[in-house]
Amino acid sequence: MIAKVASKKAPKQGMLENVMRQFDNAADIIDLNTNIRKILEVTNNEIVVHFPVRMDNGEVEIFTGYRVQHNNALGPYKGGLRYHPTVDIDAAKALAMWMTWKTSLAGLPYGGAKGGIQLDPNKYSDTELERITRRFTYALGDNIGPELDIPAPDVNTNPQTMAWILDTYMSTKSPAERSTNMHVVTGKPIGAGGSKGRDRATGFGVFLTIKFWAESHNVDLKDKKFIVQGFGNVGYWAAYFLVNEGAILTAVQDAYGSIANEEGINVDQLFDYQKGNKGSILGYAKARTIDSKDFFSLDCDICIPAALGNQITPKNAHKLKAYLIAEGANGPTDVDAEEILLKKGIDIIPDILCNSGGVIGSYFEWLQNRNGEIWSLDEVMEKLEKKMKESFTTVIETSKKRNVDMRTAAFIIAIERLEEAYVQRGIFP
Image 1 (tube, one colour):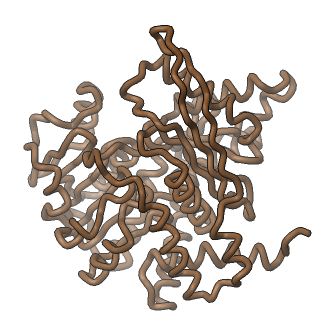
Image 2: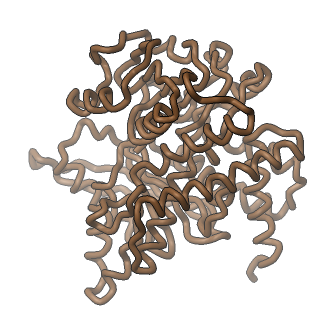
């Protein structure tokens, strides 16, 4: 799960425009085949379901759920499900497109999808969320499947959510088929067919890309100051591994506010405090509360936005003091803001590379379920590091070869792989 963010009125519109501008930029550079461009500009399927759920008080509430399937030229659709008030069809389309580029860049046999339910999960009990999740799964029906479309956790969803989806989906199959559908979702609890290491895969991937960047720029991470926006699964694990490398966490922002301590914040102590404080970091005794609008202007070396999209905008981009931004979230940097940052000489490790550890970890879980295997944590982490290193190296080489920034290089690699697939396979009929 990626954490929520303090900016409660962050614009939900604009993400689709951002991803299209990123795509168009890279497509122009490589002179993408016009017919293939037409295909990649649109989604394959956009599923909207309205479904009733009985609340704890006996009343029925109607929910709206989405699943957008962008492209499956390279394999089954893959992507998270988020529970958030900003979920709508445009947000799902943008996120599904990013997943297509992300899986292609990582060299995975997947396409891109995304979806979720438009709701604030804090307003519902666990039993209500279970019924909402199960009813959503039933409403999606055969639009998801282990060889068709494989959901995973995203904002405000977690292994428990995936376990409910798995159980509901399997119950719709005949007894003889149920065990063959274990890989309909990834990010499951270990006892329900999950993979060791999947919990930390996204955050570990964020850390790895920072580490690879540092190595390629002869930068020692020891004593480097970093700030994290979003202290959920991704933000926590990224911070955990960075601190183990000797870096210093100096500020954190979540949905409730922002805290800072220039001497350093203990990652595990803050995480434990947050769990016992209804999910909020506010009130943590070993850091001071700061105004959230000042968060991005804090003095630091590395900034990790690991919350929602459109957080770094032209309004705050000029305030950033970090020389490296590692995008733990999807689409946290507005296209116009990126132009400002690049002119300032700030490097950006793009989301489709930086946070791809999650989908790579999901791929490993999917493979284990499919083949009836169980890998050790060391095996998973070793394979994940190898895959991330391959992607990072290819992006850096392409960036230098074409004299473009890292995001453009990543998009070029992803789009060219899809173009190659269409050229080789042709279009039916």
